[in-house]
Every structure is written in C-alpha cells, then in structure tokens.
Length: 171
Image (cartoon, rainbow, N blue to C red; front, side):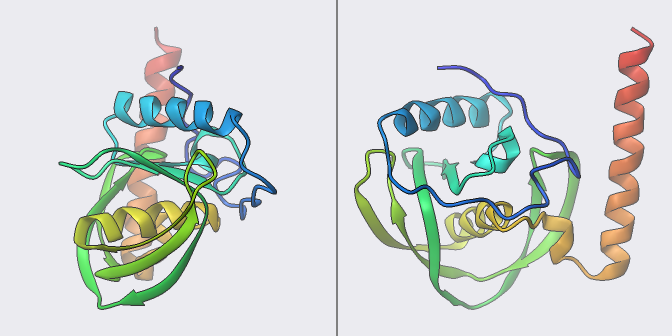
C-alpha cells in the first residue's frame, strides 16, 4: 500500500469527467487499498480517482463507525430531500462551505472485487457519496455554491495556495 499525492484544484483531471472501467480487475483492489490509505493519511472521509490524478470512475469512503468501502463505476439512481452541511475537500484543503446535498441517495456500482452493489445511504454517508460522485463528473464543491459564496471561497483558496507556494519557495 502507498499514500498517493493529492491533485489540487483546479489542476487536471479534477475538472474533467472520469472514464468508466470496462472491467474490474485484481489491480483495482490494490488501488482501493492505496486510496483508503491516502484518504486516511490526509484525514479525509472520501477520495475519488481524479483526486489522485486518475481520470477513472472509482471512489473510496469511510463513514465513521463503518468499514471503509470502494465503489467502482458508481451511479446515483435516486436522490431525495435536501439539506445544507459543511464540506471541505482534500483537493481544496482548509476551505469549507455550506453545500446543499440530497439527504438520501441510492447508489449502484461494483466493489473492488467486482461484486455488484446497490445500497441506500442517508445523512453523512449520502453527502460523502455525492461529493465523491461529483469529482467523477468533473465537479468540485465550489461549483455547488451560489455565485457570491463560490467567488469568496475561490479567492480564499487562491490565497492559501499562493501562501503554500511561498512557504515552499522560502525553505
């Protein structure tokens, strides 16, 4: 297992729709392990392929009190309800906003061993799934915000990214 580097917004492939897998092969189980290790190393609850530079339809998630899971070629079949909740993103570190999401989703896809899965998720799990699914569609959470909040959060991110670059240059 290995911790992968995280792609930072707005770098490719974060802004592009990810491609589906034609088949689930044994190497995807190893990729899922790396993604889970990476997600934990960066203290996240979800991580999608594009966030590690992989333009493929795969994500991992770890809802508290549950086992981590991997979903390959996910489809959201149904959404219900709406609520705002705070979200951040490993690709836009230290920037948070209130993002509207469905309170319930039904998801279908495959696990890392190729087994077909279909399940319902509510609350926080539904939020994680929608956030990671958005990454597979080339959407980052600021895209879900009203224009004024989006501009404010993107300015905040630009400043943080400039500060990080300056800190790296000065060392």
